[in-house]
Each structure stands twice: as C-alpha cells, then as structure tokens.
Amino acid sequence: MNVDLRELLSTDKAIPYAVERMHDNQLCLPPLAVELHWTSDCNYDCVHCSYGSRRETKGKLTHPQIECLVDDLIDLKAEAVYISGGGEPTVVKDWDKHASRLIDAGVQVSLITNGVALREKHLHALSRMNYVAVSIYSDDPEQYVKTTDSRFYDVQWSAPRLIKSNGGDVIVGARCVINKINYKNIVEIYNRAISSGYDYVIFIPAVDYEGRGIDLSKKEQKEILDIINSSIDSFDQSKTNLSSVLSRGAWHYEQKSYREEDGSPLGCSAIHFRFNAFVNYCGGIWLCQPHIGNARYSIGNLHDQGFSKIWNSANHQSVIDALHRDYRAGFCKNCRSIGFNKAIAKSRNSDISTLKKDPFV
Image (tube, one colour):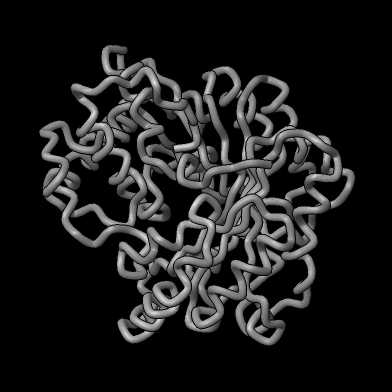
C-alpha cells in the first residue's frame, strides 16, 4: 500500500470537521472518534507501558456492555472507532465480531495491537479496517524480552503478512515506543520494519502519564537525536516520523506553551467540537487521554448508564467547562488535541476545500 505517513499524522485533518461542526448545536453532536480500552488484561508486560499503574486495578467491560456500547455508537453515528489499549484489545472474546458490527454499520474502525492473538479467523474484520497498527519493540531478541517479558519476538515481523493475506485496502503500520532499552536501535528497527512489509513506522518516545519514571533522560534524548541526525538521509520521510521526533527534541509532544500559537478564548476546540471519547475498562468515559482514571474529568460510567445517555449530558457539559478552564490556564500537556487546536486556530480564514477528511483524530 502506498501510504504517506505525513498525511496520516497531519493535524490539518481536524479542520474540515471543526468547520462542519462550528455552527451546529453542540448538545446534539455525536463523538467523531471513540477510543475503546475495553480490557486491562494484556499478554505482555512492557516496561514502558503508559497504563502500568492503572492496569493494576484490573477490569474489563462485559460482553453485554460492549454490545450495548457498539449499538450506541452506531445509533449516534460516530464516524470512527479505535480499538485500542489499556490492555491488549484482541484478548477480548469476539473482539472481531464487535469490530465487524461497527464496520457493517459504516463506522470506520482501526486496531492498535501487539499482534500476538491475531489469527486467520480474524481476517474478515482486519481486511476491512482503515488501519491496523502493530506494536514492535526491537530487532534484538534480548531487548525484546527485556521490554515485553514475553516470547513472541517473531510475531512483530510476521504480522503484516498475515493481516494483508486476505486482500483489502487496510494500512498496516508499526508503532515503536522508544524506551530506555531499545533507543540505540532506532535505525535497525526502522529497517527491519520496512523490510517486513509495514507501510509505515511511527516512533513514540515514552510518555510518562503516571509519573513512574519511564520517560527518557536528557542524556538518552541527546543520544537519540545524534542517532537520527547521523542517519536522517537513509529514512523515507513518507514512511516514518523520525524527522518529527528530531524536531521535538526526542519528545512525543511539543514542550513549548501552546498558548503562544493558540490564543482561542474558547478553550480546547477539540473538546468543544466533541471530537473524542475514551471508554475505559473500568466503564468510565473521558474526553482526553491524559485524564483517563481521574474521576474529576469522567463524564460518566457504563456501569451506571449507557453511552448514549452519558454523551451530551449535563455532566458531559460540566466536564467540558472544566477542561476549557484548564486549557485557557495553560495546564494541558501530553495531549494530541493541542496540535489539532493549533491547526484549527490557524485555519479560520483558510480555504479548506483541498483538505483530506480523516476522522481518526
């Protein structure tokens, strides 16, 4: 598949949706993209897991809860669903049937997985997805074991062949968290991923959402920058984000204040336009990833009522108001919405007719 990663990662993809929703009644808007973290169970135990502490609470949505959630997302006309982390989503029984129901109803679906539990029986769902992003860890077997405490080294390289074996237009990408174990092997990991059939390779410097000390030291960041700089001409920039990692100083998110570029009095545009929802395995629903697990910012819980009752409720609006205050005060960090907000702010007087629509914001 001929894929340009720069288009997939462009924050400009939020602009058409912001324009569409600008004059709509906010209380009637469906979520644009919903990320499902439906289990804390995982067949890996990664040293860099950004959900490490949260997973200790254990939890998962029940089959009836997932079925009701899928029904609600279809009824609300959500445009996209990420089946994603917390734990490993494919350890949930019938995960592919839930995905297929969404796809059959016209919802675009993507999967973020370590690939270990993928089988031929899942290809009916996989081949019809927008993209499948497979976590890769290292080209070195010893580093792989130290990172994952697992024994499925070969799966990270065989996954593209399996996923593409049923045809379809599914994009198969690789996601590699740069951690304290594998950071010196960036070039080798990139080369192995591309030669294994991945359409792109995203490198994500470890993000320490929970304050567990899993992020990279300044010394490690400098080494990473030196490695990227020395090999930059060998990377296909349409297939990896390493130039972006370089420009951000080996941080996943920009470290400068977003208020320098987005002076919106509104607050967080992505929140205002109802772009995202994150459904956690505890049943809680959040509007932005860094706050998952913080009860203050939860808009409701599936153990109490269904998603359609929670979405656009009075409590939903109350949390939005709180998040707007935080955003205007400059408290937000480590959130992808910041990039979308900047793009939306810059586009207010721009021609958007040429922008490609991609609901996976």
